[in-house]
Length: 350
Image (tube, rainbow, N blue to C red; front, side, top):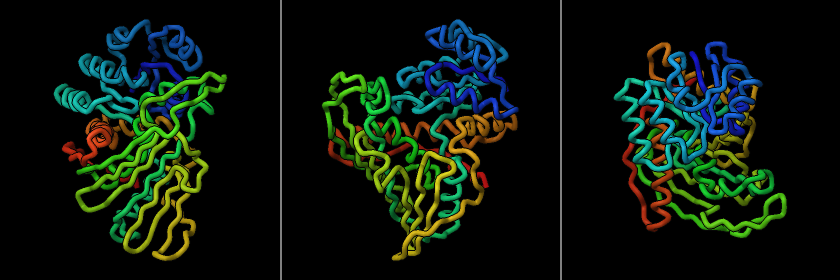
C-alpha cells in the first residue's frame, strides 16, 4: 500500500527507516508545513515532497496518511484526510479531547475507512508474551498492576523541553502502559487521579531558566470491570534508572510477572510465585529489535488489504484519550470519573 507521511519532525526519521523494512508498504512522499523539511526527507528516503497537505489528499495513489504532526494538529489533519477518503494512521494521541476523538472514530466508520494509531508497543513480542502468560492463567486472577513511567527531566536531553511540559507526562508517555493494560483487560470503567508540580523551576541545556505550570507528576488509579486495579505513576522528574524503572508489574493470586519495559519489544520478563523472588521468564517469541516503529502500520495495512479488523483501531485510541481527559477532570474535581467508551480487545499475535 502507498503511504504518505504528514509531519516531518524527529519521529518521522525512525518511521521512514522502519517502513522500508516492510516490502508490502511503499512510502511515496512527505508533507510538512516547512516544505524544506519535506524535501530533505524525500531526498534521504525517496518519494516526493508534497507542497501542502492538500496536495497529499488530492493524490489518488496515496492509500494511507501517516499523521506525525504535533499533538495540536492531530484532529484537523486526521479529519481532513478522512473527508478526502484516505485511511489514517496517527501518532498518539488521536486527539487532545475525547469529543474530537469520538468524532473522528464515527467519521471513519461513516466513510468506511480504517483509522488507527499509536501507541502500538503492546504489539511487541515481550509485551504480547506477558499478556499471553496472564491470559493463560499463569498468575491466577490478576488483581493489581503497578505501571511506572519515570521519564526523567526532559531538559537534560531535549533542546526544547517546554512543549513536553505543556502536555505533561501522562499524555506524552503515560499513554504507552495505558494502551497495553487496556489491550489486555479491555475498556476501563472508572478512575481517580492526583497530580502536582514537583519542580516548577527548570533550566534548559543552554542554561536558560524556564517555569512549568502544568503537573509533572501523576498518580492514577484505574478500575476495570473484572476487578483489576491499575496504579499508573507518571512523571518528568525521576530518572528511568530508578529501581522501579519504566515497566509493569502484574500481581495475581498465584504469582507476579514483571515486564521491564512497556516500550521495548525485547524487554526482559521475570516471574515469581507468591512470596518468592523473581526469576527470568522466556518470551513466547524473542524480538530482534527494541522497537519497530512500523509494526503497527504493518498490521494496519495488512488488515486493510484483507478487509479484516486491525489490532490497531481508532476505538482503542479514543478510549485512551478518554482516560487522559478523565484523569485531568479527576485531578481538578478530586472525584472519581466514570468512563463510557468501549472497543474490541485486539487479538494476540501468537
